[in-house]
Image (cartoon, rainbow, N blue to C red; front, side, top):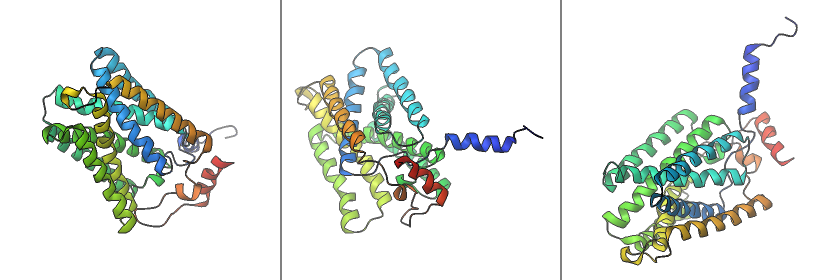
Length: 290
């Protein structure tokens, strides 16, 4: 009938308006890893600082900030540095609270919380790979893959928090030595990828998990009092200092656009395979650079 709208076409148009136009994550550069480690330290220090204050404020910042940040991230249709890193910071804060909550509230030992979050992360990765056929972050060009990505990020933060606490307390390494141990550990996937041609996808997620206890260990070392092995600068001071550096670095990549994936890269390689994309997808992503 004239003027009528086909319901299936209307749903398709609505869905296409919600789908990303381009990859929703930054290009992986050295600066990416610097900012990522800073967010982990900032999230650890912020969570601990809030935990020592008003519980209602902590809940509002942790849960409310987490929800608001992801709402902003999912509303954008392409990668926006400030929005993405704000989401990463709030996931860091919320993930720390979630991991600490199981230990403090439920009394689970750190080895148990580490194992629990490791299983959670493994389950998310298995479901993601089974659904999409790839775990590559260069493939984050659909809403479903973006959901899987942020679930994985949350799981890595929770696992990293538990792993860092397990190392520092259960293994009795302390904050500084834990940080040094994770600094050595994060070099393993780098060396394996560089020298042994390790598949970049598992190498990336290996390193991504380790950034959490690495950053958190050094944040705790700087912020915690000397009586428990820290330098005594305070969690609030460490959180504020890390926030300033993060803002400056995110401002830099926003201006230079050095962290935006190129359309050919963002098309999405399968694990260990070639880049695949149809003309329409590449054309849509290319509009990001018009």
